[in-house]
Length: 139
Image 1 (tube, rainbow, N blue to C red):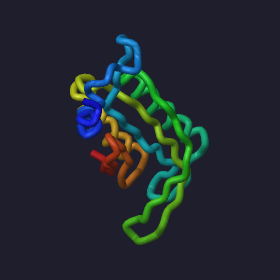
Image 2: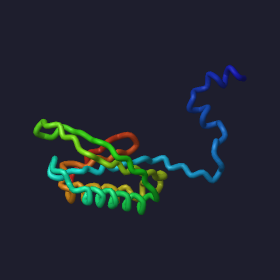
Image 3: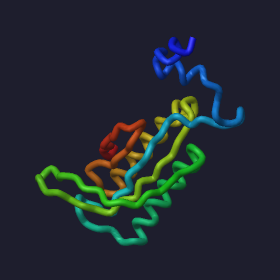
Image 4: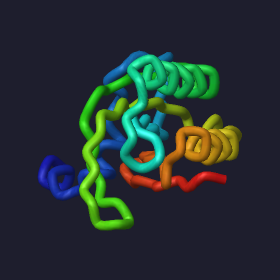
């Protein structure tokens, strides 16, 4: 019996194992993140006050839509259409949702991202979903 279990594919073994967490544990399997840029019109820096307002807007949207966020400061870079490498400060605002909640609200997220791309003067806004990066253009 033990030899047979060792040879069982890992995925099947994990499904049969009892949960490590209490029964009331909630699983939020849909991971997403919005990259908030600190520039407008390609590479013009915005003020710290405007950056904080952008982050607050994204945080509030994701908190209201999915219940919580995590914010991570970083430095992003990309190559512009003109071939220039642009570095900028960013804040990545991450959130999680369960599958049914995500399905109900994904059109809200798409509209929000397209609106912010235009409002913030961006060619695109970075949106990460389940490990894939989407470059969302203004509406």
